[in-house]
Image 1 (tube, rainbow, N blue to C red):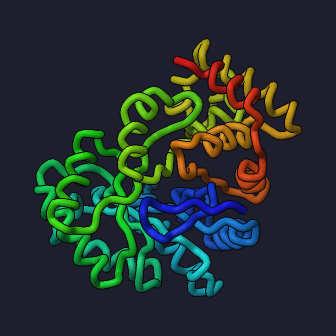
Image 2 (cartoon, rainbow, N blue to C red):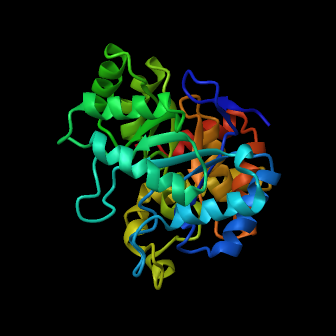
Length: 316
C-alpha cells in the first residue's frame, strides 16, 4: 500500500487514519483491541486521538481514548507499527487547557503515561490559544522534539492567518515547525478547505489529515430523512446535511458505489484520498464491518469520470 509523508519529515502513513475518538466511549477495551489489530493487519499504521477524548461522555474526564490505546500497546506489543498522533489544548479540567509552555510540558507527560509510550509521533495543537504568545508555544514544542518525546508537531482548527503566523514564527526562531494541519473536509464541507486552507498547506508543504470525513455519518447514506435521525445521538449534527445539495451528493454516491460494487462511506473516503491536497482522511469504526468499509477506500482507484461526478454533485 502506498505511504504518504508527513510534511518534510521522514514519517510515512498509509492513506487512512483511524480516529480514536470512539475508544473509551462507544468501544470498550476488547473491541478497541480488536479494531486496532484488524487495522494494522490490513496494512494501515496511523491512529489519531486527543487527550480530551472522551470527556463529553457522562462519567468520563478525558484521557479515556489514550488510556485504551496504551493498554493495546502493552498487550499487543505493536507500538512500533503505529504512527501515533494525539493533541493538547482542549480543557481537561480547571486550569488545564491552552498552549502555554507550562501546560504543554505537563500535558505531554500525562499523555505519555496514559499511552504507555515514551514518545508521540505527531503532537498537535488541538485549538488555537490567543492568550499565549505563539513563540512560547513553539518553544515548548521545540523542547519536546529535542528531548525525543515528540517527533513532529501539527495543528488543528486554526484560522489560516494564525497557522501562517505560527509557521513563520517557528521558522524565524529556529524552532521546530508545524508539519501537518487537521481541518474539517468532506464531500459536503468543502468550501473553506478548498478556498482558504489548501492553498496555504500546499504552498508550505503541510500534510493535511482531515476530520469529519463522513460528515458525522451522513455520507454513509444511513441518514436520508428526519425519520432516520429519530433516536440517533447524531441527530443534531446530521440534520444540517438534509438539504437539496446533500441529497444530490447521496444520489451521486449511490451511483458510483453501485458502479464500483461498494458503498457510499467507502466511496466518500476514496474521493478524499484521491484529492492531491489531502494526505489522509480520519475515519472511525465501532465494529469490524464498519472498519472494512473504511479500509477498502484505500484500495479503490476512482477513475476521472467518477471523481468528477462526485466533485460536480457536491459543488457549492
